[in-house]
Length: 569
Image (cartoon, rainbow, N blue to C red; front, side):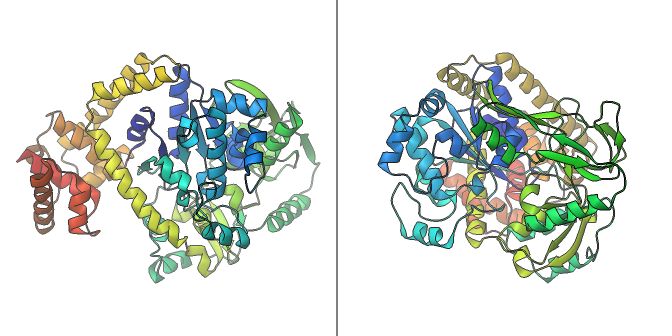
């Protein structure tokens, strides 16, 4: 599913689980949705499962927003006390849309607790008290922190207030919410097809000797200069950064974090901020930017560089690995509620970057990283570390254990289900006429107390037509699908989506304009047989029943392409 297709579903007001591989644009899509809501006068409640994730999106942790705090269980007495908290009642009662980022790190039990609070405060027994609930994350990332005793208890408990397993998707709350799955398929981080296939093999649980042999080509006992080191444990990171800074000659410059707002909220921001309260730098220090430069786009969260000096104002001057010189000025992290800034901290958006933990690297895109995964102890930890870098050439590896290439087996099984559900949702919404979708979007905005932004809809429609015309031009050049995707910087699946639209608009003819696209005659014959069998039953050609007949050896993209030609016969 493309980001645009996911936005269409989000704007409908449906409960959504937005997921996808690292670099697929989950955060970007949510930011687009938030901007759209605000343009219509609707302020969403933006939360995240961890402090670090919350600072990235300028929101609360879900624990703070809902008032559950650090509780591991929620009694009726607890719910009653929380429902007497004026701030929590105002936040939850006034909300219309609840966004929870990094849901993979939220336990099933915690999700159920938030649900119970929302239903009580809003006096509505629908999931989350009737809020549009948008869950964002990738369960192949780091799992929830849970003790062995908690896992045992959660496995044995089957009540609504608790869960049936460790992961959020295993809770009764998730089942009751029944979110539409939007599985993003575009890739904006990994630029290397070989490396992308390698990461996909880990997700499928199919990392074999072939994948290990590929990693062996990247073995290096020591880190090259200018490359960040990833560790599993904080102690290793702190020791290396302090030691390397000490080796540098010259004066140490320190920058103290400034803060405004209630102590509790400020403390939450400080815990989540990747820049330290006291930042110590010297000329020659390896550093990393800890925030996206949303105004001038000079750097992103994860951009690496070296401090080359300090300007007249005393702030550090950084030369990035790409050769760009940046004057690093203080930036702000804040907690907002209903458009009001409740608390803020200000600091230079830098941290020492000779080393960092895998945990804190989650969400970053790195040009290069050196890592020792020999002490990996958690499912997904190795995958998170490896997927931080954009290309195989940017990876440097000094150690590896078996767990580093393992993902949680329960997640792997669930992922197949998510992909199928996403394909079904994509097809279902793709059949709704555009005027009907616009009416659906407008009605939801009105129900939230906002005003539909028709000008924005028209603009998006214009942009959409433009991208289809660009693909049509590449079709006229008789380019293969892969070459069209490469030219556009998109996935093959997205290009097929463009072709479906162009065929529906009758601006291209598959037999004439797409005759150059290679089709395996045997496979096409089998797909045609399966799709036509489905058509006889349903008078349309949904992909999921056809693929169920054919088996997993056939991809949805293959079937979509075959359907183009069959429908044209």
